[in-house]
Amino acid sequence: MSRVPLPYNPKILELFRHPKNLGKMKDATVTAVAGNPTCGDMIIFYLKINDEDVIERASFESYGCAANIATSSIVTEMIKDMKLEDAWKISWKKVIEAVGGLPSVKFHCGILAVGALKRAIRAYYQNKESSPSWLSEELTFEEKQALEEEELAKMISKRMKKEGRK
Ligand code: FES
Image 1 (tube, rainbow, N blue to C red):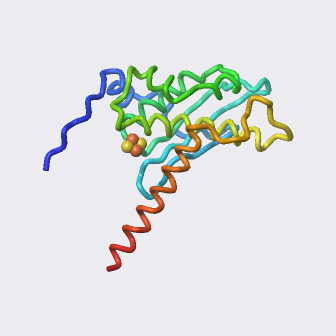
Image 2: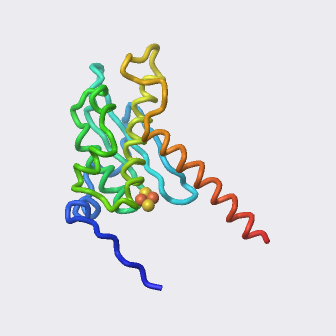
């Protein structure tokens, strides 16, 4: 059975082939993971944050698809030199707009990238004594979606293991 290639726009293909800020950051202030290693769709975000709560550098590692790599890459560019408060406000829709659009079946790949960013910001304040008022206690849409995806992936992998044992 042959697969129909997804209609990715040239910007996504370019970011996929030549992602920016790809790789581990050894001196990261904070790191966050979103996704599930069992199914392969996993992303790690690294942020270097200064004393003024500004993101000096950002990088990522992605084990997801082209859409995930492209959206993660653009997120690292968007948040450079940004205050955490402003980075927190970035929505998955803004990111998808920034890459020039995504096929709707791939929206979750961009949501996962923003989920990882928000987890990193949350983790940063968890290590501090107090968190700012703009940091909602309730999980953001992107964080919730990442969680749902992780739970679904766990369920599927459990089921597959069970089937394999039959
Ligand atoms: S990250 Fe899972 S399909 Fe794109």
